[in-house]
Image (spheres, rainbow, N blue to C red):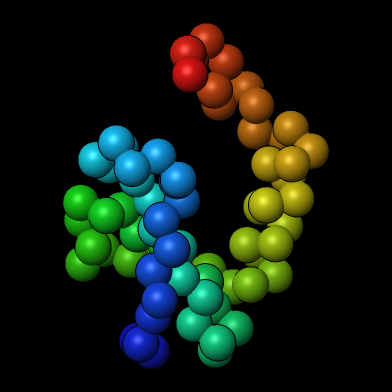
Length: 69
């Protein structure tokens, strides 16, 4: 695995559990949980971009219905 710069997927410094994302420069995107950093999910940049566009378009809103902020 390339050397990665992990980016927390939150700005909330009080959160103790969150996802981290890293862009490998090799065409892959790496995703892990901060509390379980040895387990890494790998996807392509194209799939990551499609996922992000889907989130923006509300395609996954049904997963968070009823969850309070």
